[in-house]
Figure: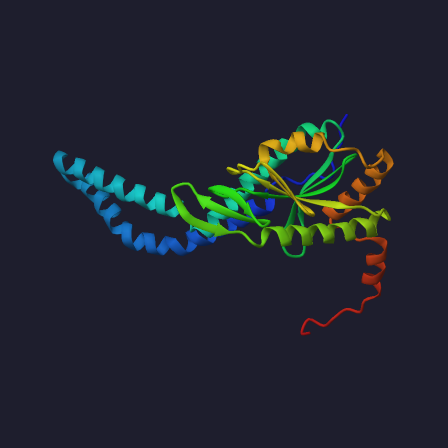
Length: 267
């Protein structure tokens, strides 16, 4: 029977950011929409109630058109908010790709919260420890000197340079390595992996310490990795990852916290 490390839902952080942004957008848009479309909708309803048959049809068309416009605009938040929804969808795809491997003993935890941001996915198995960062851009991804560039399908000239992806995931992998070693006492290597759920013609690029891979290839790539950890180490490291996912203090950190004097609210 397979065991899961933690019970976090993939994409939860991005999904929550999207919902919060959409909620704030709707609150700001509501008075504007009411001022622009409200009078027309009310007038249409009034005509439907008091006027004859010909005007009733016109009123119905006007009311329907403005009501539809209201809901369309209300449910189309700005692109930077929509980006979080796309990210959550990508993370759920990575979760689905990893599920068959969990049945074979891979331990996976999703959406591990940090002080700022989160780890998308942490996987621990006989093939090692992997920190997976999911990206779900709209367009085609091309690597140039280790830097992903996204080209839009309908505008090939729109080239978006994603130069923060590689240094960020490498920094996160180094931080996770340190956390696991503190909690488990095991010296390990955390492999940084960027998973693209977009058109990625190269499919798999091993760029130094960072792996870039097309989402559909993720399952087979991990499955074929050589075994470098014995089961005892896997269990020990997985327990450490669980404690990170549950935001549990290590014994060292707990003792430091207990000894630290309380700061006054005004400081």
